Image (cartoon, rainbow, N blue to C red):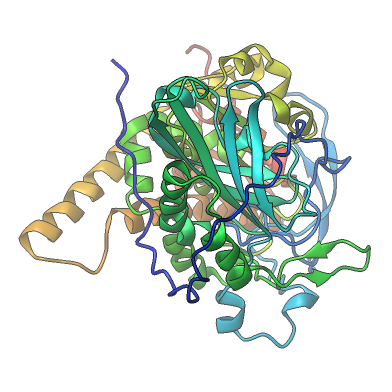
Amino acid sequence: MVEQSDRARLLDWEEIPPPAPAPTQAVPSPAVKTNAPEKTSPPDGRTRGGRAPRAGWGAAGARGPNSVTAVVASGDGRPARPQADRSVPGWDGANSLGADHVGLSVKEQWEEKDQIVAVFVVTFDTRSGNMVEWSLPQDMNLDGVEFKSIASGSHRITSDFIYFRKGRYFGLACFANMPVESELERGARMKSVGILSPSYTLLYRYMQFLENQVRLQLRCPGQYAPLEAFYEDKKATLLPMANGHVTSCPTWSVTNISRCMHPEMKITHPAGCMSQFICFFGEQIMVLWKFALLRKRILIFSPPPVGVVCYRVYCCCSLANVSLLGVGVSVPELRPFFYVNIADITALEKELSYVACTTEKIFEEKKQLYDVYVDNQNVKTHRSDLQPLLRLSASDKEKYAKLSVQRQMLLYSQEVEGDCTSNEEDLFILFFMELNDRIFQILGEVAASSEPILTAEHVRAMGLDPHGDRTFLVDLLEVYGIDVMLVIDNPCCP
């Protein structure tokens, strides 16, 4: 039986008192806009403009003085593959703060400002389908948000929330479905109220507001005054870029201030998200961890509601968290796409690495779009070279058992000793961050040594199985371009 997860709640949102409401008056409903599927993705599939703070997802930084040309020696007879110059993990201490951060204190880099670039209302029309009913600013290109804001299959549920990508922006929409006595609406009124921002890390702040507004729109369609006031209060101040595009206010790269990374994660993921994620997948979390660290394209399928599945996208990306400087600067980012539908196929075809979720079963047949397909708790891949990674190694089971023991000890200390200084979220996040740091630290030290040979002892010190994790380790060296020779032979028998 497939385990059903409860809907995890985001952190409590402290709403700033809104401006005094305008005098009550009838607000005319503007003409409804019909939008086509999104067609505005950059040609190279990369997001232009500012990047939101990421939790260990290959933050770009300046190359340090220790940059080298790495050559992968896989030890399995395959020819070595030269790599482009990159900072070798483990010893590159170059400051990766960009020019945008010059003169900013850590506190200024830490505190993101309100950056709402659009607010909108989407409705389901029985004759025309999903439509953008209202939006601000009126000249904002919202093509495709009507399909992202109401997930396929949502007519079967009463409420939901959806994280998504729209070009170089991130969105959050709250959906609600209310029964009505109307033949025109076929007995149900469905709407979604959403926002767009250059960063997804602040979207959780507005969850409660959006939930309240979608209920208001269902009861009193056309009452847009609160949304207009919200936009005027929260709208972004965007900085011009040299190429004429705009980017968000300066943000800092998580990997250069490792001590700040964990608090940043705590305030940007929903409370209880990581613990539910790991309890849902059990030991399979170790399989997802490997695919995430290898920057594979991961697609998660689940029927609505999709909100909790968007949390799984975020948590899956968090498994690849690394705090060491220089790690991942030249590998594809593990980009969170959150909810996707058939309108996103063109964009996904251009992506080298991502994690996304969908409610549309048709994606399973489009194998060119993904490397790993997750159907509820079933993790699978159609790629023969990745099949070995689906098997749990002895070290995978040991690591998961260790994590479970640590969790039980934490729960015991909280219940018996009243320890409130740490929680499950801290435990899970730090567990995988320290695991990844240890792997790349040892690889960096071996690569920098006079004899860059990776032995079984090194592999065990990383917490890996020299034989069971050999395929994973070979792929890891190749993906990250680490110049070491793996001398571990395959066992003669399974």
